[in-house]
Length: 188
Image: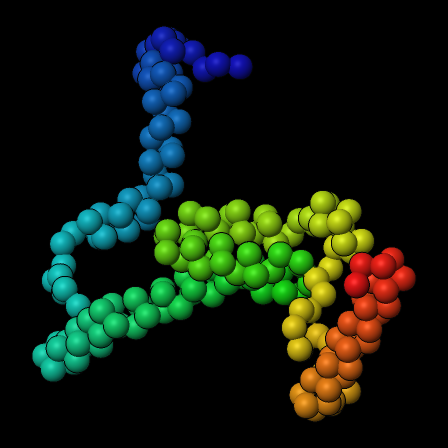
């Protein structure tokens, strides 16, 4: 029920308390409740002595020197290290997953460092993909080590001289087989 907004009359005369609209009375009541908040806001708005820093004198100079060294030396070194660590992640992922093209991914990571990180997303995607044509060609999609590190002889501890002798014997056997084949065909 809305309070009346016009003046009502009674036996004593006009009642002006009803002449004030109800919205104005509600606003006055809420102002009475909000006076502590208003005083706090006014107190904060009054200017007080301002300080540029928590430090004064020699402490201010020392803090400025420390901050300048951090900004000029520590932050760039940390940024370069973090940039480098992020850019070798695809290489590490490819090695962990035994990706057959891990060396190519490593090269792409190095190129990405030179080009400011533009190639890094390609290296990341490449490290997580399985090469389909590689599996069709070689029958596996995991890298097999090439060279002396991945051979069984290197794992067994065979000396390089022994391996050289074994290879020479194998070549001699193959030459004998080739000579026998030529004799049988009459090519000699």
